[in-house]
Length: 396
Image 1: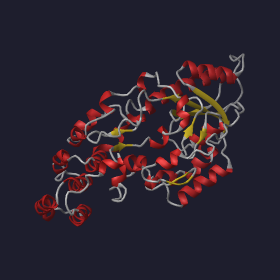
Image 2: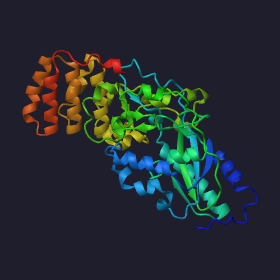
Image 3: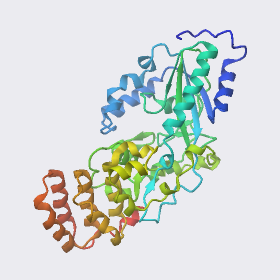
Image 4: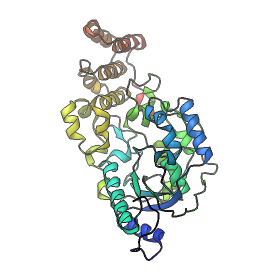
């Protein structure tokens, strides 16, 4: 099915037919773009990688050639159909502030894994297209090397704001994206213009100052990257700035004034699970691998694994200012995971007086074999003059 010739079954305008079918399948937005990227987009991707701003997301560098040139991904592609599904929240994304004993999970991860829902719809639309038009198709969600936000802008779904995320005039910051590459030549829609103007609220609100300039982000400082993609210990200087964000960060998205045009999603797969809207940190810190997998069944959170997730939870505990959570940190000092033990040390040292930290170190340090964990103990003893960390709530 590599031909771009329309099959005889099609009697109308294919763009209009595809648009109607997409909306019938549950997509909220659709646009068409040529299967090519602007030179400026490719240059920015190259600079992002060359400057190391991608952190340890090695897959970005490994597949940069295919990400920067759709023809490297699939030479036969002529058109990229970009599709969006609204996942607008039904509550204030900033509700987590002032709740230090609970964790904040990004809006996109409070429900079923969107990859499953969107890919199923993309495949259904792709099969319909292949049957109706006799064309070749390939479908992608954001796990593939596709510059989806750049294509979404080129297809008129929105524009990349100063925070580098897509902004829609109809859905604000809350669009999941997917793409269908096809051999059909369907032309293109007009690209969306940038409507950010002089606004820079998204840059100002970033807790870790991850934006080096408008439209430029250093992922190594981004809380979404740190809590999801980063595999190791989180840099000590950034930990206090994370507050109680335990999976992702919505601040730059949620502050955007274009959200006034957004509306809550009606998609049942994207309605939040109550237990993920304000989960209690003490309960999360007690999860073992089996209970973690069970609690996050069908959730995108499951993919980072229990150890990375507990690392995030323990940092939130350390930032909580709640001495009653210290026991949750102490309970993880002998965890099988060195990553978890290190975060537990930091959390305990933020909540306990020095003499208590010294006693814990005396009990634990001599038996510790992991050098990074030993370094956490040394840092904790050096940085704990009294009861530390009780101002962590300032960063929530």
